[in-house]
Image (tube, rainbow, N blue to C red; front, side, top):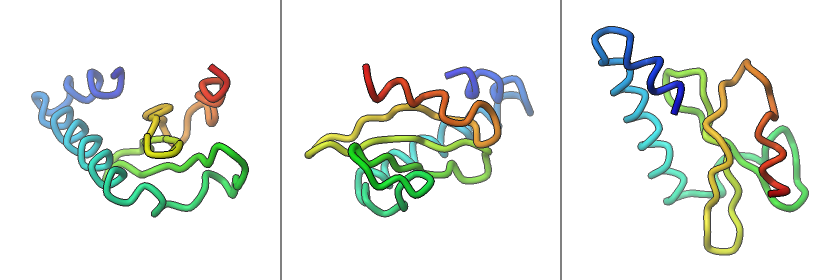
Length: 91
């Protein structure tokens, strides 16, 4: 993950470790409560896209729940290239 590598170069790698922990924590919470976040930008169509904020970092885990599976579309920066991952819905 590019963001993780970038954060590894800050504060002797401590920030990279915190980013990885935040991403892992978000994934664990999504597994427990996949429907907790509201739909992405009010989108209510299928598939239902949801996002989970990564604690103190400007990133969101973007995912889709399909039947009993969760598909991660991206770890997306909140201010850069919004929706760049949307083509992954068609792949």
